[in-house]
Length: 629
Image 1: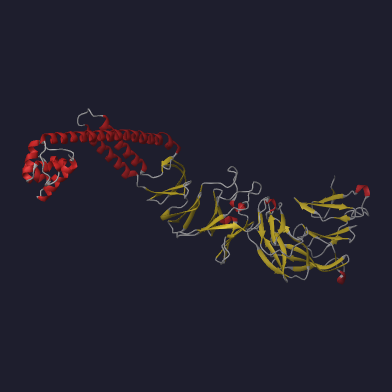
Image 2: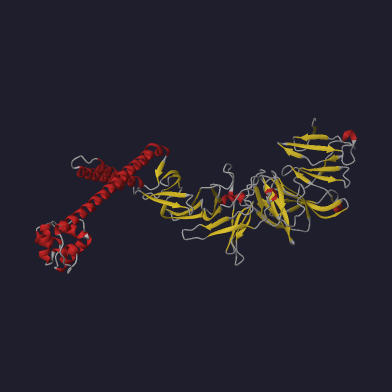
């Protein structure tokens, strides 16, 4: 006998009469649940009900047992019923066994879930919270609480079977605990807008919490199990709306938002390093070189990084960013600002490797450049066009000594401290031989150089140690032999218009406006039209009034020295020692109010092993005393 076929036949007969299970139950004085079990094949009527059922549907009992009309045959009804009941009994036993198995699995699962959620909460409140860790989502602890409540109640239902009314008690406990959990969640879980962003390879995770009332933004680091993290810092500015996140690399995430005044702000979360992981380095130094996008069409985006700063060329428009305009994040990202507005983010790609000695990106490393905007922006990958050898010691890296300069590829670099280089504006390509000792000046008060460009000559100078520069065009029909400033405004220049053998014709000029204009004040030693300088003459001024002029012999055997006490209007010859041996007067030095002067023997001197004399003056050259050796 097919139990399912029997049940389907009963259902078919009931539907033919348009009866519900309840209607049929009332006709037979049995419950609708019993009929439901017949039709589902999990129960069978006894002999009395079977006969009543056959009479009601006007079919033979054998037709009922066979599950179809017209199939009448002599059968042992008692035997058939006994077989059906036995079959139903086996089905019920299997069903109960399966139900018990499910209960067992539910019990074990609920116990495991309860233990895990309990340990999770204990670990958080007892350990992690002491080290300022928080759930990455404020709602998570309440979700964990609810899982713990559900698993606890299920465990109680299946483990404490002997307790009367255990289900009612468990449901009551569940309801109370859930309501309490919901109350705490409503009060605490929705104060912040919690933002979680994960990199494409799942190696890095950015967690932000934004106070919905104040707009304060906090960023979290050191994620544990992807659900805990520790507060790193609070952003400087509060936000008024959305926060844009864009992963530039798998360990660099650009975070852009508008502050409460509508100004665009930028923060970069970094998680990696391109060096040895120990030493801190500057991204601006690592970027040294000429970079551009991989393309041969159109106008490629370019980035040039040198001692002057960083220059971005995009769509044919150039923007210069000084080092003061650059803010470094970690050791792999840089934000470029223009008047405190973030413009670009530069990130060192994961293929970057730094040279141990120069801390410059080695050959093959690329960088990512991205504009800062609340709108969707395109990140661009740039490669370095500058040739890089395996040894980067000579790679376009300018090493300048303190208060000195270096010329490279038409660019003039200076340094005030021997560490930080400054690029002097101008094209110095024509100065291939560099400068003589007195043709430039590098000092805190005044830094000045000159250069020729075509048919023009320019003076370029700074009064604030390279923070800003001025350029002035001057005449080019003379050579500059010496240039010196005693203050930022007062300076002197020795210039020659013509030279012949050992003589030179020119002037000493003076400026009182920092170098913008110059006035000729002295035309050389001699009378009337015979006033000349020596071919190797130099000037050295101590202050606005006192200065010196050297007049060397062409052979270098002797050198005369002249002094002025009226700012270069007149000079008189110095005769400190009357000697045919010690006759080469060097230009003096001046320090702490003392002038020091060396008189040696010149190129023909060999007396006493080339001995020399030293003198000093503390009254600006009026009197001189021997400096004891």
